[in-house]
Image 1 (cartoon, rainbow, N blue to C red):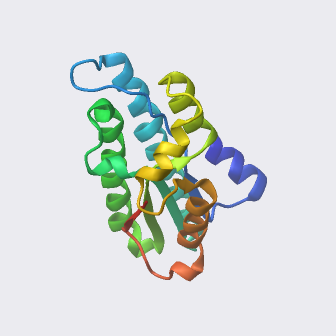
Image 2 (cartoon, rainbow, N blue to C red):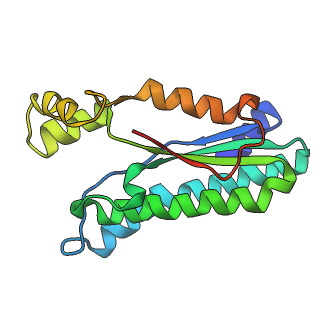
Length: 179
């Protein structure tokens, strides 16, 4: 529906940013089929079918296009309680590279951002409330990372805009770690 509505309203698709994601915790000993299905539905299935629709629209127009997938640094391994989440981001990284390879001849650029730990409203809820770390968690987290602070969402957005723009040139199939 998203692709159809976009085509109905704008008549074309030039770019797609897949930025939705769930980060529910689940490791090898506590994950169940329900959490597996839930995370893979949002973090892999949805971006795959959005890319499928966008790529088809871009190909039919013949003008190329750009896609950026927001992944996670956890795609490299992840914490023990993020096994399923990490698997979804690893799967999306592979799909990013596959789409880039399959459609570079169509001038469709597909890249990804392995986003590091970011200070977002969702992360504040997760850490402070869900995990019970309270308001002080942010100071401890900031002190524990190399630049002395978590990423800002705007920094990830800036990189995504670059990757979607013509300034990125023929760059495709890249998955950039942004920590």
